[in-house]
Image (cartoon, rainbow, N blue to C red; front, side, top):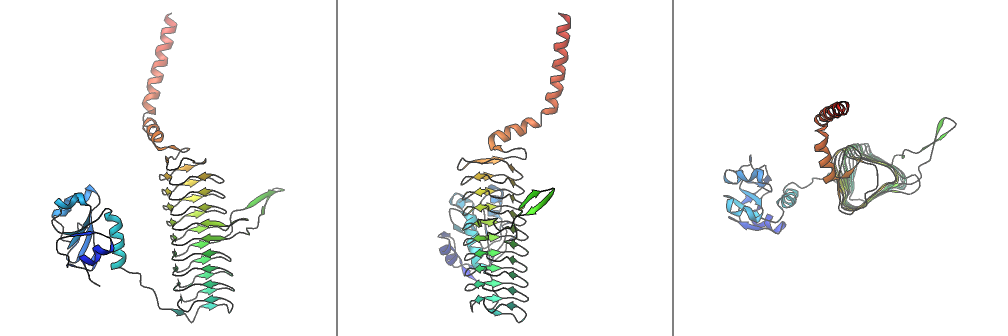
Length: 344
């Protein structure tokens, strides 16, 4: 579907430069775009293409207006504007409402008539499924689970019993919500299983990537607050609480009973120890090991050695590269000291 540049600018509260009636029907990278496409520039790396692009229009910040030779939408944050425009140009296509003939739905389950239940889905007793929910093929929804309005479960998602999911959530394929936490106690040389009697509670507007796991609580619930975004292959252990609007990249592992604050940014392959607290608005760079609580709101931390503040870690990393040369110099100095001592 085509939208005029004027219509798209209104969506992102932007200002139009050039022909406001230009028709746009897709997005494209600025270096490869063609007619009827819109792109964006938010970094110096792509400024060079503003004079050569074949895109009908671009999304730019005000400081690039003089360098732009095509029509444009001027905004404060081009990446965010691009995301909103892409959502309009590429709306999610939901399957029609109704329950597939091969789905198995318990008589006690309450499934809103507007929901779409795919092939071979299993819905257990006392499940509640809200308005406009989509559950794709081969998902399993355990007894007493709740799925809020407008949520979307891709194929092969498993939602264990008693777990609750808010509105407007997206759960990608092969993710498991509510499996038992890793709770065992040694006794007489063996491991005694501790029943995991909590659940998982997921807020509104949460997205969880493919092949991720969120374990149920041992006693209290595991909680994922509103607006959290989790990448693929993430492990959230039992009794963890992830604060609202925190983002985690691929491969993060969070051990049990840890509390993570709101608006945190956690880089890929980070490991986070159990029973610690991470304050709000903390940034942790990729492949870090978090072995202690981080209590400074808004701090930035890095490591694949025990974690430290980012500035100190960067200095130490530079020194690590000099260790071999420093060792040689130290050996030479020791020889000189021995020689001076023997001469005395």
